[in-house]
Amino acid sequence: MRNGMFLQSGIVGHSREESMKLISKFLPVSIILFKEDFDDKKDFQSLVKGINRLYVIENGVKQPYIAIDQEGGKVVQIPWIEYNPSNAFLGSYGNIAFTKLVGSRVGYDLKLLGLSWQMAPDLDLANRYNPVISERSFSSEIQTVSAHGSAYINGLQEAGIAATAKHFPCHGGVAEDSHKVLPDDKRSLNAIMSDTQPFLEAKRSKVASIMMGHVRYPSIDPEYPASLSLKFYNLVRRYFGYQGVLVTDSVDMGAVVKGYSNKEIAKLASDGGADVIETVDIDQAIEINDFLNMKDPKGSIERINKLIPQKRLAFEPPADLIKSIAMVNNYKLRINRFLDPNEETFLYFLEAEKGSMVEEVFSNEAEVLRRLGNRFRIRKYDPSSRKKVKQIIIVGRNEHIKSRIGTIIESTKNMNAFFLSTGIPADLGLFQNDVSYVSLLSTKVESILGGIYRAFNLF
Image 1 (cartoon, rainbow, N blue to C red):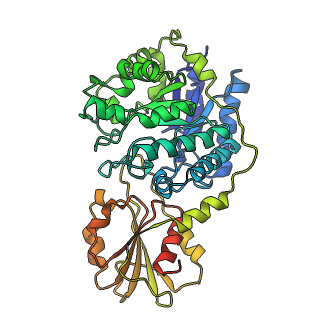
Image 2: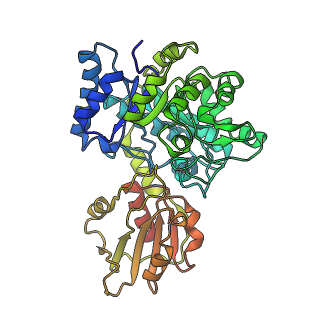
Image 3: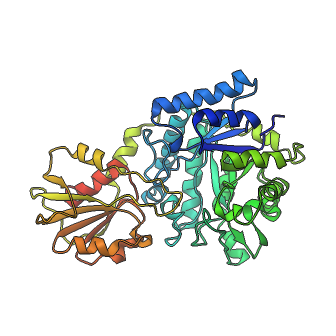
């Protein structure tokens, strides 16, 4: 048994050379990568090759499970592959076969890149006030989350990638961000158990792993969050009969590290029933590893060794289908009047601003403008300019959890304004009624282009 058999570690925070030295000290069973770890596709491939070489050639052990959190929507670590628009988009589109195809496409691309473990999908119920979940959820309806979650899992695992259902039992009942604090879900036992239905469906789909969330549920365990609670691990194992890998959410998050030492985290998670303890912080991983008992009374090693599903996919899932549906599937929530495609139109991408610590901040503005080309008289909007503007398209997301809505309203007075929401449509009521509003549920270039074409009444 190798030293780090029960750990998944990130490598953020050190130079690559230093990270490799640290990894070699304990050889965690899994390495999770984030966009900060690489520059581009070539650099990514070099990193994966270097990690595998460290394990197989330099240390003579099996290569690790290289993992990624490539949920799609607002959580995108690898921008050049065909990521899904968002889970909320898939749930609203309502086509189970399409959701499975999206899972297959993501899995296909991850497999080509040498990855084996996807830390998705999110099976939490949607909560408009929770900045962590928002469009990461398929829906606020249990049956929709269950059906689409299972379809995505099936597609992903057919491509030979281990899926992760998260965050058990459900993160959607709280408003706090567990990256910062430990949330308390004070609902009844029946309400919490009802929210676990998507995980039961995931178990029936033979999901490779389930992630335990950093939320405390006093009606079940008033002392510990699910990720550190023996009661919750027993719930998954004994009540659900789940025999796959149980992994904690990253234990470097504020919900855990503010209340527990690394020694306590190691003991509680391991004794409770976690097969793998995840932490993005490699220094914390090394310290936790020192506290772990290397015996395996729970049979974790056998489960870990069976993590990766056999690849059954015999074709390349078409990426153009994902792009085409992303372009045309948007809500017509409130349209007062369309824009004139012959009129000069300004495009205003609001400055990227994190809604939560899990959100990846990136803008597709340059690529959208490039793809539009010269088909319309579209100009980039400068809010400091005194130029008279007749019609404008604003692209933003989840403004209901930000503090700039007043500035947006003031800057669009006396204009024919269209707001394209790339997040969830919870901010619709904040805009005055003369502002047209279309929900895209997606940051994909194609989704934004589709919103612009909708604004011009082209479909």
